[in-house]
Amino acid sequence: MTKKIITMAIVAAASGTAFGQGNVTIYGNVDMGYVHRSGNNGAVANMRSHNAVESAASESYLGFKGAEDLGNGLKVVFDLQQLIDPDVGTSSGLGRSYVGLAGGFGTVVAGKLDGLRYGIYGKYNPFGNYSVGNFASMTTQYDRAANALAYVSPSFNGFTLILATSTNTQTQEGALNAVHVPVKPAGGNTGDDRLFSINMIYANGPLSVDLDYETTKAVGYSNSRLYVVTTGASYDFGVVKLSGVYDVIRGDENSLIGGNIDLDANTAGLQNLGGLAAGQEYDRRNWFVGVEAPLNERAKVLASYGQIKDRTLSHADAKKWAIGARYALSKRTTLYADYARISNGSNAAFTINPKGNSQGLSGVGVRGFAVGMKHSF
Image 1 (cartoon, rainbow, N blue to C red):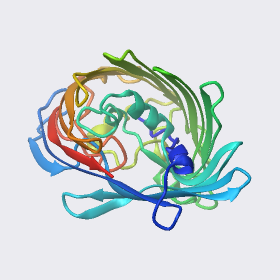
Image 2 (image 1 turned 180 degrees about the horizontal axis):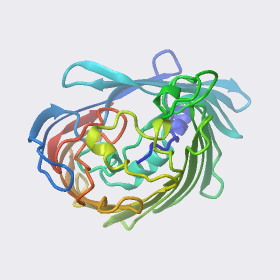
Image 3 (image 1 turned 180 degrees about the vertical axis):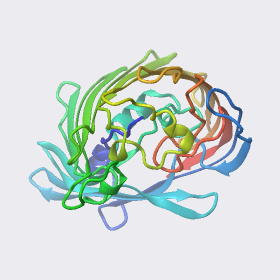
C-alpha cells in the first residue's frame, strides 16, 4: 500500500520531433467514457451503484515538451503536462514536469517525475494504470514524485539503468511533519518522505524485463522505513503477448504513518493498513499476470488476473480479474470496453477505481464496467 516512484518518458523529449517555436512539441490525450461501478464483498459494504461519464481508460492531459541542441551532443530537455477532467471542463493538477540535460552520458532531470514502480505496473498490465481493469489502484500508490532527481543511463546491449531520489515525495520540503503520530517538534526537514530507488531494465526484441528496488524514510522517525522490490516481464509471441509483475513490500511498525502511505486514500482503503501491533512489521506481496491478443490490425482483446497477499493482517487478501477489448479507428483514436471484478477477504476493502494513482483515489464497489473512446495528438 505504498506509492513508490520515479521513471519517465524522457527519451521521447530528447529525440522526438518538435514544432512551434523550433523546439516545442504540443501533445495531449482526450478520453471520455461511461463507467458503471457496483457491488459489495469483504469489508466493502453498503455501497450504492455509481454511474459516471469521465476519462475511463487513460488520463486526459495537455502537454508541452521539447529539446534544445546545445552542441557537442548535449541537449536541454523539458516537459510540462497539465492533467484535465474533460467531463467537467476543469484541470486536475500538474502531471509530470521537469527540466534536464541529455547527452552521451545519459539523461539527468529534476522536477515532478513519473513513478518507477507505478510505471512498471502500467508497463506490464494490459490495461495500463488507468481503467477499471488496472491493478495499480489495488496498491494505493502515487503515480508521481515531487522534488525528484533522476539519472537515466544510455542503453548498453539492451540494458538501461535508472537512479532516482526525492527529498520529499508528496509536497514541499518541511511540510509533512504534522501527519506523523506522535508529531515531533517541527523544523527543518522533519517528516519529509525521502525516496531512493534503482531500476534495471532489459529490452531486446520481444522480451522486456524490469527489476526495481526502492526505499523511503521519514526524516527524523527512526522506525518509519519502507522497502519495495518489484519485478516485471513480458514476451511478445506475435499472436499473443504475456506479461506479469511480482511485488514485495515490507516496512517497520510505523512505516505506514504519514509520509509512507497515500494521504488521499479513502477510509475503506485505510482499513487495509491498520491493526499493526507494537514491533510488528508490515509485509505484503502483490502479483498479476496479463495477456494481450490481437485479432487483426485494428482489434485486440485484453485480460489480467492478480492477487494481494497480506502477511501482516489475516483475511485481508484480495483478488482481481479483468477482461477488455480495444478497436483502433486510426493510429490516434481508439474505442474501448472493459469489465473488472474484485473478491475481497473479510478484512479487505479494495474497490474499483479507474484512476490507479493519486488523482481521485476514492473507489466504488467491487464490479466495474467502462466503454468509451480516446484520442491522442
